[in-house]
Amino acid sequence: MSIKFKVSGVDRMVRTIANKGKQARIATNRELDLSSKRIERMAKTKAPVDTGALKNSIFSAKAGKLTYKVTAPQHYAVFVEKGTRKMRAQPFLRPALDAERPKLLSNLRKIYER
Image 1: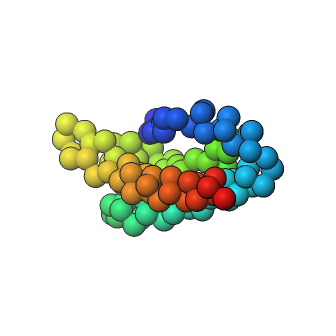
Image 2: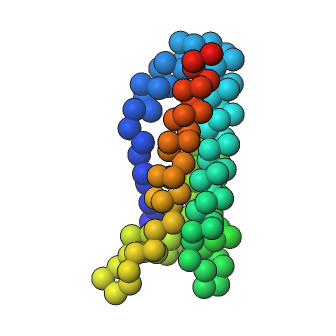
């Protein structure tokens, strides 16, 4: 079981980047890589710690062209993030993503204003 968050507007952004040239794609790819690492770091700090297995399992990786994924592969990660009827939610991925979104958009704007 996994948790997926979709960021809207990505398709439009990828088309825009494709039309800008190689330097823009390289700069965008670098910024997305840095952003995924910041999300990973923040998710690790927000993850609840009992044995430390969940916190230690979180990682980021390149998933495709201008696509990065931050994953918590522990089988119980979704239950910690969303909660169950017997356990309150302790979100760690969503808050990390929400905190990073404005910073990423700002940095991408700076890249494309040049």
